[in-house]
Image (tube, rainbow, N blue to C red):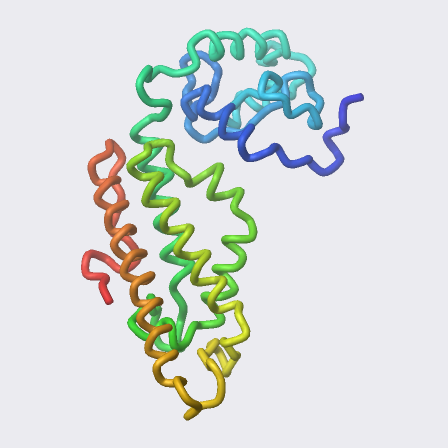
Length: 256
């Protein structure tokens, strides 16, 4: 039985959503439209049927027409099945790469913007970014945003992760580095002090305390350098694509 559209929409699995969007080249499936701002439509009207064969990407205009029950502008389920067959018959306009360069630039731009915003905080006077003391202390603002980003990876997997192996490698490495950061600051050695999480590996002055603090700062410095370097590489990647990407959050001078 079809699920009524008044009820909450069940989530389409991220891997299925990616498959359907790639099949259409991240464009509306209606011939000659190719609008990149798309929504997934259930061809049979059953919102619980997330079989890729039942899903088709449509722009807002054509999606609305697909929901019409009558009228000359209506796009019927039969029409949609014909559009779907055309996609399946020619799944990609690019035989050697299942992505549009301009679309990849947009995805990478969204990723860089999201990571830059996640790792930034307001200190009461200005916006700050990661620095060389990040391991000794960690802003609670950043911790909360980082946890939210990593707990819900759907937006990354579906909307920001590139299909170009060059960009994808940098993105995945950044996500792994962020997971290491989050795991570290979620541990017992970090104590909340005001608006920061401070590294406290035991009692101050205890044997080896200073050495452990220095080692933690060094680990986080290495992670921060990797993050900044890879984000700059993604900026450079996007500058070579048809749709350019403005400088990242830190401009062209971000460094530790």
